[in-house]
Amino acid sequence: MNGNLLIYIGIGLIVAGIAYKYGLLGWFGNLPGDIKYQTEHTFVFIPITSMLIVSALLSLIFWLMGR
Image: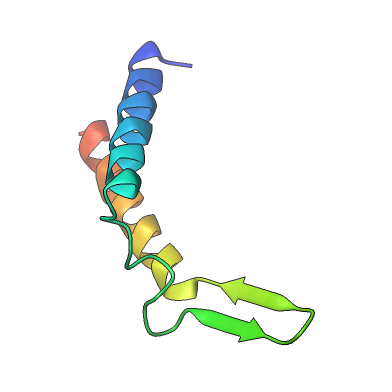
């Protein structure tokens, strides 16, 4: 594994942690297309739209790093 990749992953995790701490990720899981189903004893959460956005952002980042 390339050492630079580990550094980039670490920086990304730090940025995500700071964004989460200061409430910048409040949109995650609350977008149209995210499925929430709740009954008295069951809670199912499937963040389809949020995961598509995260996937697109990660694809863009890794594509830019590869250039």
